Length: 162
Image (cartoon, rainbow, N blue to C red; front, side, top):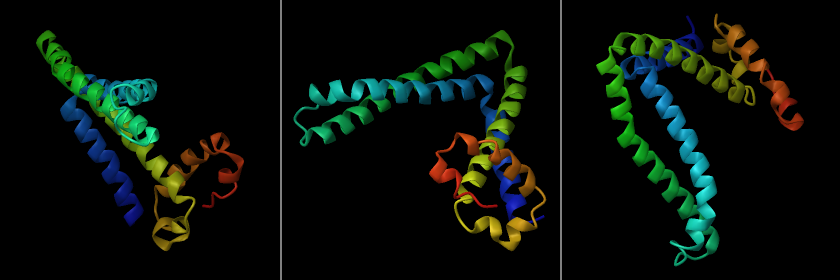
């Protein structure tokens, strides 16, 4: 087993264990929280920067501060809401199912993280290393990463080398 295989297995295992402990409801709420926080921050950044944070100069910095403030506000609000929703799942008796589905979600998320790491590494010389070449799992993850190449801009897609 090469260092690449150990890395891939570790990322997937840590993600699966983390999601098992937290459960699918908490994991999905976390994902929704991040997406919602980014969307709200994008929408609210300019108005917050122009009104509440107008004392900050230059205006670009005020807009950036507005983005950060809105993002943090949504993250805090959702962190207060998450225990109520996950606690409800335990009360209803979905604790075991919640954790089992969390395991599947965490395994999938870990695999996606490894695929993204492989895609990023494709822009370096790392895939040419002996450790990468001898990895048993590298061909699988490289094939999976290749599925994303058509969605990359042409100037990036042409630089990928395995």
